[in-house]
Length: 134
Image (cartoon, rainbow, N blue to C red; front, side, top):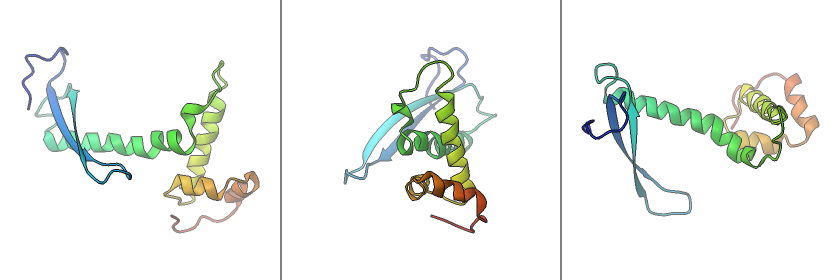
């Protein structure tokens, strides 16, 4: 643990140093990355294993939801910005992701490519749910 006497957040109770080793598909070597996190949880409320689990759960949400929106549906490139209009394509994307997950697709990009024709995508709603899909 890192001492808290030099931390500028008065309610912080624990500071974590997280060292990640990662690489992209195009890089043969691993790169080390150090990040820091703060929490208001006391050590008796959440130990190291608990905090590690919370961080992994956060990334599972990020990878399952936000990453799909950003990469598969290129949500950040959406030019709809006026009033409540951005909610319409966002809700349609959420609906599609929900339908794909309901029908067992683990890979949303694959499902999206397989059902680019609107008529084909709508047929998903009227066929029985398969056991497993990739």
